[in-house]
Image 1 (tube, rainbow, N blue to C red):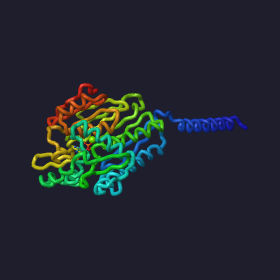
Image 2: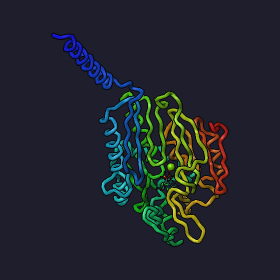
Image 3: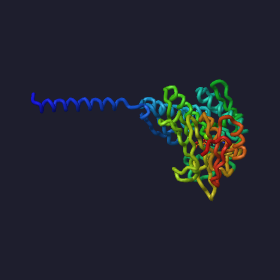
Image 4: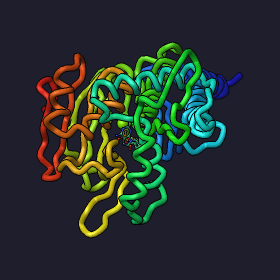
Length: 334
Ligand code: ADP
Ligand code: MG
């Protein structure tokens, strides 16, 4: 073998070895660099899940399967869901899943805590307003008054896994609490799978697990009501917490200068008009945050702040219709 041939043989061996090394190092990705995410459309809103430290697509898929399952259990409009069965059984007892029962019991807790400001029996009003499809038709006073006769949590009786509506025309709507509850269930599942860093966003209902991969907290922007989609009124840094906002700007129509939105006064069925644009709740549990964001919106800034201050581990930001920011005493604002 000539000297030249031997040299080219060594060069070939070197490059082969180097490319195997490169391939190998490609497989050995540092877990802190691994990340997968996906978006979908559930509960009439865009949802996004981002998992760090894993590339296991089956975990991500299970999250979306879980959301589909919960949607078919808790949707008011989907025929055959637990909520649909409760609402369409003319007051006869209906056997439902444990999740549905625990959600109704949690809703009852916030009904009691708020003296009825949070009330899932507002469903007849929700049907009348139909904000999902309504371009601007205001229900008449008579229609709302007739519906109000069937509103009241006292009409909902829960015993074991059975739910009975004392008034056959009463109906329930879990729209003010379900997304938070589902976010908590997703977090439970992901934690069980060993996920230590994740971001769950169910249409602005954000729940985090741990910190970001670089060990810094998650930065969550709170939207400026009626501002551009990316415009923030405040930014908070959190780790493992839930941040949920209820606002007039989420589902509404405007007529003759009045904003008609989807957070309703249980006594009258009218959209709450109390000079608030939004309420954001910071909490550990997203179900608590979801229920409380709606509750505090209905209560208004004085009673809402008072309720938040009386609860452990809950903080709030109220934004008025003059874009004034009102924080609870322990809110971690910058
Ligand atoms: P979003 O669903 O946009 O995140 P909310 O959490 O504030 O906002 O929920 C608003 C939904 O809650 C309404 O669309 C309706 O289904 C329901 N809701 C409206 N008013 C009340 C109320 N006073 N108590 C309980 N639920 C309510
Ligand atoms: Mg809510």
